[in-house]
Image (cartoon, rainbow, N blue to C red; front, side, top):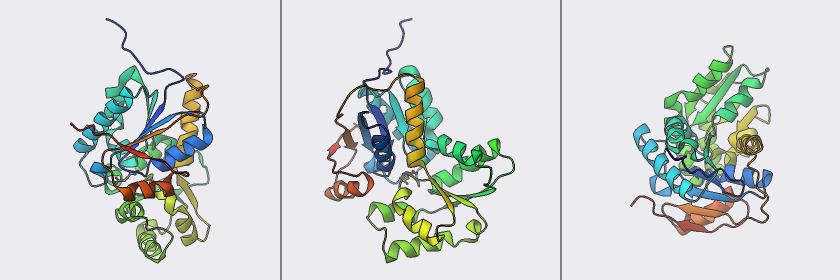
Length: 275
Ligand code: DGL
């Protein structure tokens, strides 16, 4: 049988997707660490939020988006959404096969947390879908039996952030009401297990008066991408790459909000991949 064509060539782009624009926090960290790599981003705004959807829907969306990113020749596909990483990573990886490398945002964070010997009790804030999957608890305790994991669904935070509500009175009230919950009372570290949450990291740090270890996926995942490229000899030699940012639905307000998530202005292109 003929060998399947794959996208594993250094000059090909890195594909990144999320339910919306939260994954731009990961894209931003990747461009900082790897400025020569070309990005193709897909934000599935038409189906936002993923946090409330069934696993079957997320798998279906994930496969269609992966196909789109494969068609754009992506060498790596980064699932820059915790919900999709929790519910659809294995499905997407099987679907993509040897055509590209698939990374999720959960495993690199789990590794960092498990390696921190001073952490005993970690809190996780995430969407309902990620919390229901119990994936952080399963993966962390598989590596560290002595660690306790307490997960709390914080569904209001995603829509609040997408609407541009952060760093103000309302966002502080919502954040405080979640962080005050008894479930998070005894934690010594907190995972921001949603790619939207780096935007409210300063407010969370403030709530804890800067005395809490707070881990978000953006920088950790960018390092994982960098190591994966090195390991597979897929680092590009291109200069000044032109990134592409696709969305499955488009509004002006989304284009404006992208500036909070991705430093520097970007233009969203609509790609209807659901036909
Ligand atoms: N950014 C997605 C995540 O990391 C969540 C947003 C959503 O609910 O769609 O889980």
